[in-house]
Image (cartoon, rainbow, N blue to C red):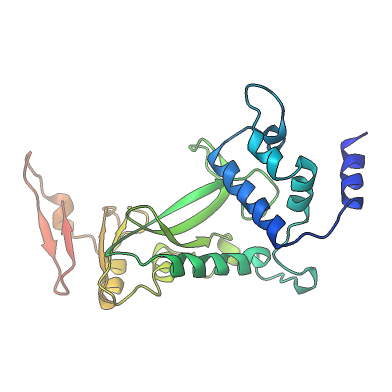
Length: 245
């Protein structure tokens, strides 16, 4: 039987799912994130070296793959051609709400991006030849320093993303419900700027990060001054923003 015929036969054998089965399904998804194997089919193989008994006790491979193929997070009649993320928008909002509900962050926060490996066809797939996984979907993440993910935002591409177009917009959108609470945010040099520090300070939030010397408002004295080993130089603005080298 060909692969196409096999898929058709599975679809014809569809039967309704329920809450208990879907919990098992997502449990297997989490399990696969911890126990890494090359292919989904490998979790059901009887091979003595890589075979896993646990998935076979939860559900059959055919049922798992059928649920995976049929899983959708939006209605087909609610297509939104202006939002590339409309099919997962509701899911991301639910996830962020649960992240927020499940944990109260301390003072220190950090923002960074990560790439979910993905080689399928999608218009906002990113490519970075310097990464081990060269193709994927970019996520911006607000995390606590112990490593808890508090909020995520998926990058939908320059033409479709009003929020994630500049580093400052990314930061302010991710931190919107944590401003004016005295948090300290740590960022790398893609995000850090004097303008961002000023915007956060207006909202009682501190910024610590590495700063590119070609950024706007970078003090010229910091760049031009020659320092000996063990020396440092700092400049502070009238609104208490300090650049240190």
